[in-house]
Length: 252
Image (cartoon, rainbow, N blue to C red; front, side, top):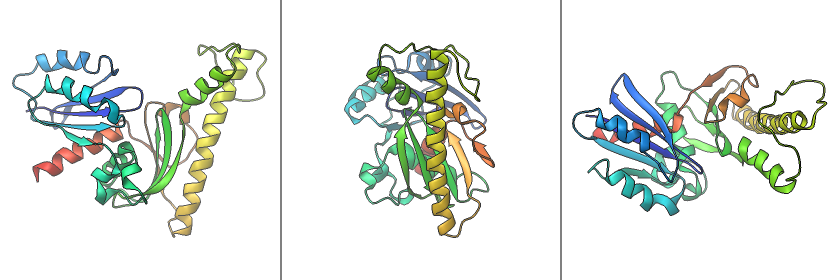
């Protein structure tokens, strides 16, 4: 029977319906309409959901999500609300204040074949740059505003600037038009900031005797980081992978 995993982040919901070992369907929703497309997919399948796991970065909206999920499945979901729910995968000082998404990325990473020490970058509403050990322990890292947050912050503080997302960033030299200057400037600030945090974690790994950590990139804005790092693994939906790992653990 199918399983469902739900990554409910700061601004949107990403879900994965696992129909079979080699067959899954993914989609997105808002907190106002979290599962509108998922209902259609479930109606195409015989039977009900076997199990549900949810990562929730918005505890204030957990009850709303729980009500929505109760209409899809009679099974009580596994809730991952913070790193404290995955103590084996979190080595920070305060697991209860460590994001569930960061802990799940660490758990998912160690389940991948041939995994070793990594720098895991999750580019979402916030961007996190974390040190994750070979055995899937989140040792710590850095948290910064994501691409949309950086852009929105400039708009909030300078609303008369001519913003426009439909412009091309030349990527070199200088811009001669204000919209291009803004988009290219914000993009450069975002990419450069992530690059700096990545270098910090890389230096930390070097001091631990790890000279070749792999860089793992996930998250909705991962494409904005293309070309920044060598030896990179792009893993879409790493949080969802971690939730599926939680469901497999429950079966053992």
